[in-house]
Length: 414
Figure (cartoon, rainbow, N blue to C red):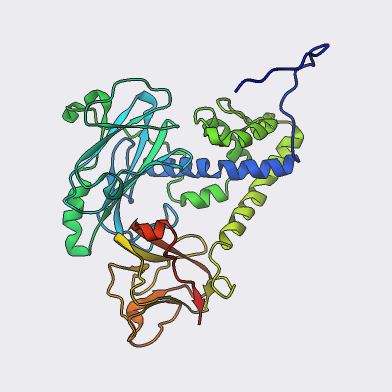
């Protein structure tokens, strides 16, 4: 599209970006906009600075690090993990060029490679549902890369130099774990120059930074981060991490705060009114995020899901989630983490022996106390107090889910 300018008598003096809203409101918007990027970066720093094998996903970049068993109740590196699959994690740095990610023939076992850019947006999801269970390979290309893609390899363009791959491999109990581990061993990361001869590729190098806090969960670090540290980190990341084209309106507005793509940002050198607005933004911005999350799980009668009350999900006969793989419902506390309990049960779903009612319906009970004899197989233990959240995962959903012909049952207080 072209635009023709009207003739003017004299050119107006150039001006910088103007505030279209109050500095305080714009700073809160900017805090929320950059929150996923900062969260991803702190998670990357924590995992790539921990010794390999010391925690699920911990180890050097450009290599898959595997969790060889289902996660336990103490895992807090990321929020809302699943308990259906084995995790494998690979932080990729494409600064030196493309990397080829490959997966083996899984023999029919469900797997998924969730590929995210530095903003945490999913840019591709190779796996059983999208590409089948045969062996596959995908070239991750950095922004602006031009080159030839090897035969049999699919190109995936990443909008950012940093990529996080979270792989999931289905496992059916302890006895099935060795077979699932064998599939995990087939996930590989290979520099493009060594594709076809991976044995000659140099081993990934882990350069650790002693200043990185590897003990505090990433979310807790981000939520408690001082304003000056938060915004200086934003400036560092924004200088090398391009925003998405679809975010152009927000990107333009944030220029008025001095936040510009491809340029650094020094909190201490910002104008006083901008510093003041940015200093207040974390508290207000995080509060708005938490408030939004608290509104995502209302029950049928309007109450929030909160202990010590008891709740029930009731699936009518023949109306369990229609999926081609498997499904589950996982319970988390108000911090987004699983709730330790004597049963070590954090989810229920198609892999569990759920008891049916005489009429064929299936209930899942949520609460801090046992729902009673004959019902404990269908019980998700909740904490003694506080808000909780339920996440339903539908792996390889059928068309009736995608077209909203099937919807989850309401969460009902009883």
